[in-house]
Structure formats: C-alpha cells, structure tokens
Image (cartoon, rainbow, N blue to C red):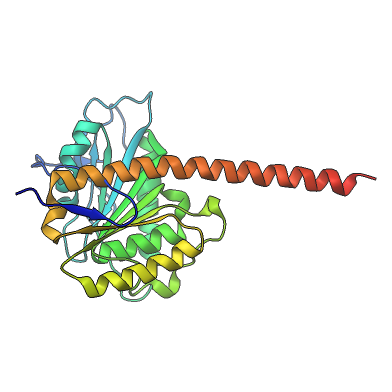
Length: 269
C-alpha cells in the first residue's frame, strides 16, 4: 500500500539510491588533463571525501550540487550512494564529506568543508544559486549551523532527523537581512510526536526573523529511503531556492531605491 507523506508548510523532492561503482581517485596536488567524471574519492583532504561528477560533464555550463553531510560515524560514501540515481538522471554534482563532529566547536570542520567546496568550484562549473545542503541526524544539526552562519555558500537546506537544537545551537547567529537568509526544510517523523512540537518551536524562532521554514512529516524514517521522498526533497530545494533568490533580488533592489531616495532628499535644498 502506498504510504502517505504529509507536509506542514511546503513539499519536497529527492533522489533514488543506486549502487555506486568503484571510486576513481582524484585529485592530487598536480591535477592536469581531462576532468574525471562519475563517483570519485578525493585525495589530500586527510579525511574521506567523495564527489559524484555528472557523466558527460561539459565546462561550458553550470551544474547544481548537493552537499550531503552524514550522521556521526556514518561513512560519507553512503551519502553518495543515496543520491547517485537522481544525480545521474539530473546531471547534478554530489559532495559527501566525512562528518568530523568535533567535541568542542565546529570551526575546524567549517574551514575544512568550505575549503573543499572552494576547490571543487575551481575545478568544475558549479551553480552557486543551486548549491543545496542536506544533513541527517547529527549531520542535520551541523547543516542547520552551517546554513545559519555561512548562508553565502548555499541556496537552501534540508534537515533530516535533526534541527537547530543541539551542541552548536549557542554558536548559531540567525541573520536579520533577507539577503543573508536561506530557506530551511525540516523533516520529522510521526513516530516522534514529542520531538515534533520542539521542532515547531525552533522553526518558529527562525520564521519570526523572516526565514522561510517548511516542516515535512513522514510516517516513519524508512520513508526517507524511498525514491518518492528524494524526488520531493529535490523539488523543494530547486523551487524554494529559485523563489527565495527572486525575493532577495527584490529586497536588494528596494534597498538601493531607498538609499537613492535618501541621498536625493539629503542633498536637495
């Protein structure tokens, strides 16, 4: 019987899980020649990092990318497998780093992960307006922190089995300006009704600051492994990123117009 998926605010889209072939090694300090495609294990980053590069990659166009942070102790290759099918069908990049989950503060992981993002963007054409961040469990909490404090690196965020409350919540600095905010989708399970009320309270804090926040409820966590769930997640990421960026452009335009009027009035005698 087909299971229903209920959403409180907005809907969502995700990929299908396909078996991933053996990983090609890439890249060394001296990286020349044709850029590799397919599933790659990136070298020289101290901890395991995996990247899926769309087959038939062409350097004359930009590509969307999902950055998928696993739970603590879960291998990053599992995230590559999770997104492999839909990434292949839609010609998307997938970056799957190790969740370092530091005991104290996350700054070393921030520097490490954002540095990898920068390196990938130097080698491949990545669409910065479609760079999606997804986290699961402890990876979701870290993604909540990263999306809050480093919104310039991502276009929207999905949190699965985790949200803003946790080890790093005191370090999160929600932004006031629309241009510094990005959309969040929190996925919760009907199996955990008590946690659901807490998530709604956390989401309300961000909504009151102007953030676009959506809550999606699944009957159980097994549903998050389905193709249908992944498709909905991706649909939300793509649609919400586009609509929110339009709003950001309008807010910037409005701010420029207000500034122009202020200067005109100031110098008018």
